Each structure stands twice: as C-alpha cells, then as structure tokens.
Amino acid sequence: MEDNITKEDLDTLITFLKKMPRLTQSTNVLAFEKEWSDWLGVRFSVFVNSGASANLISMAALRHLYGLGEIIVPPLTWVSDVASVIQNGFEPVFVDINPKNLCMDDAQVISKLNDKTRAVFLTHVQGFNGLTERLLRSLEERDIPLIEDVCESHGATFKGKKLGGFGLLSNFSFYFAHHMSTIEGGMVCTDDEMIYETIRMLRSHGMVRESTNVEIKQKYVHEYPDLSPDFIFAYPAYNVRNTEIGAVLGRSQLKRLDENNIKRQKNFEIFIKNLDPQKYRTDFDLEGCCNYAFNLVLKKADLGFRKNVETALKNAGVEFRRGSSGGGNQLRQPYLKDFLPEKEFEKYPEVEHIHFFGYYIGNYPTLGKQKVLELCNLLNSL
Ligand SMILES: Cc1ncc(COP(=O)(O)O)c(C=O)c1O
Image 1 (cartoon, protein in one colour):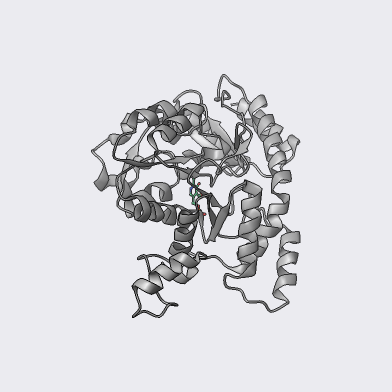
Image 2 (spheres, protein in one colour):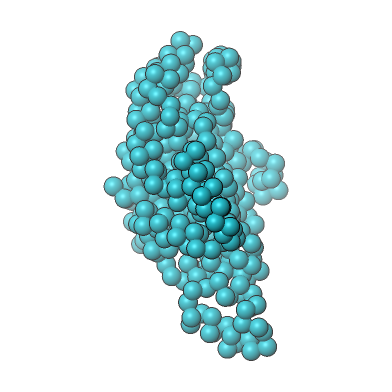
C-alpha cells in the first residue's frame, strides 16, 4: 500500500504551519466537515480522531437517544464495529455475508429483525455496496435505523447515490490504507439534527457547550442552574477530537478524492478481468464499487494452494493481508470469547471461507496497469 498523503499535501500543511496557527480543533476542522458533507451529500459531519472513534460515538449516540437492544452487525468487519456495540451495552446479532459483495446477506439480516432490534450496523466491505432495495424497505417499514460503516468504501454508490448517505448515521476512516488519509481520522455523518448535536457533545467529553443548538444549551442551563454553563456534561463521554493538522490534510486530499477513486476503480477492473476465474473468485457484484484494495479470494478451500499463493506474493514483495481487511471472522477472536457459545464461528461458512482463503492487496492511484497485470500473471501462474 502507498501513502495517500503527497508532497503537495505536506506543502499545504507547511504553509499553514508557518502562520503559527492554533492547532487544536478550530476553523479548518469546521471547513473540512462542511466540505465533506457537501461531497457526500449530507447535512452534517463531525470530524474525529479515527474510524473506530466514529463507530464508538455512533453507538453511544444510539444508546442515549434510542435505548438498548440488539444490533445486527457482520462477523466480517473491523474489530471496532463489534467492540463499539458491546462497549455500549447492546447485544450483537451476527449474520453471514453475501460472497458477491462480502457484506451482510440482506435476506439473513431481514430474517433477524424483531422488536428488540435497535439498529442494523452494516459495513460496506472493501469498496462494495451492501445495500439492497428490499433491505432499505424492510428497515423503513419497521422504523429500524441503518448505520453505515463506510470506512473502506469512500465514493462507492448504490443506485448512483454515495454510500454513507442512506443511514441515520454513517462512519468513515481516514487511516493510512484508506481512500484518503488525515494520518489518523474519521468522520460521523448524518442528516438528523438531534444526532448531530449529540455526536458533537459525545466527541468532546459530553459537553453541552459543544452543541450548536441554542435551545439544547438553554434547556441544560435552565435545568442545572448550579453549574457553570461552560461545564455541563450531558453524557459520560470521550475526547475523540481531531486537530487542525488532520483537517488541513483532509481538505487538501478531498480535492483529489474523486480523481483518485477513478484510478483505483480502473485498477480494480483490470485486476478482476485478468484474474483466472478457475482459481480465484471473480464474480463480485461490481456495480457502484469503489475499492482501495484488490480482493483476492481463492475459489477452493485448498491449504496447499494457499501456501503457494502466500509464498509467491511474499517472494515478489507484494504486501497482503489474509482474512480481508479485518483479520477474517471476528467470532474467532479472543475478545468475543465470553459473549458467544463455543464454536459459534462455524455457523458462518461464507465468512469462514474469507477468513482462511480471502486476502486484500493494496490498490492505490499510482499503481499502473502494467503492475496490476504483472500481479495477475503471477497469481494465474500458480
Ligand atoms: C470497516 C472499518 N471500520 C472501522 C475501522 C476503524 O478505522 P480506524 O483505523 O481509522 O480506527 C476500519 C479500519 O480499517 C474499518 O475497516
């Protein structure tokens, strides 16, 4: 993988730093949030210090505003999606993935919806869209919120609309390997004003003065006359703010995001078209996908072939991760041991296949056609 932060971004940052500005969250953070909202097509965005923090305060907002219950979440995702559910006292409910897009199987999600379901926390895995009409319709009919984790899929679309604009809340990451990077960073996005105000407070110690809504502030000041209006803490919360440095880098890269995404999409198409379908899965649902990684999934559960693939990639100096982006089946991880019956992970065969035979390999804008073809030739020769 190659860093998305260029010399041009760093020059912009240096010019900014030379002005001796304030570096804690300030005008650049606000401007980045506004520009991100415009890019995504939502009303509000809140810049935080990581995608994991975006997950954490999204689940916290849901708990405070909607109450506890079950959250449907995939076993193939990043640890923080599941951890944030547990940390906030929700019960995680898992379903298997659809092998065509690596996201939760929509029919299985629908079959698990019930009176206790507080939300569906869907991860758009590795640039693929995980939404379907029937899933959105089912959630709307039952008035169950959708939370989208778009940390791996900036710019991907469903029916021409960007992912992250469908849910009550959506989360993005700007960590190193992702479509763009603010060193560390994440974004929480929403169209809902109450959610926005709550997320702003949760980002900053639960402080009421972080709300932009005068009525909310006055309500607390009126209810708690013994407290300094500057120090009213509405929620037991966190400090997950980012800085002006991250925002300057984010604003600089956002200008190139669409252009870079087109390059990544081209690379991905070349990769999928030239891979041997007898050996690797190539029948992914590519509509609207925008991938920062090449998904390499072995067709057969063959440990000998897996060894050949890993050895060949290592020898050629190609960086890869087994288990896709999150290390495979979360249900096999020690942190979930106390929450699940023994061998629960076996009930999710599609995730299990990705766990043992799925990989991700970096796909970045400066990677040319020739290199992608070389990679395919290497893999096909095995
Ligand atoms: C789906 C998903 N959610 C959340 C995160 C966490 O993002 P961060 O690394 O910025 O904390 C990641 C990280 O890679 C991710 O892939």
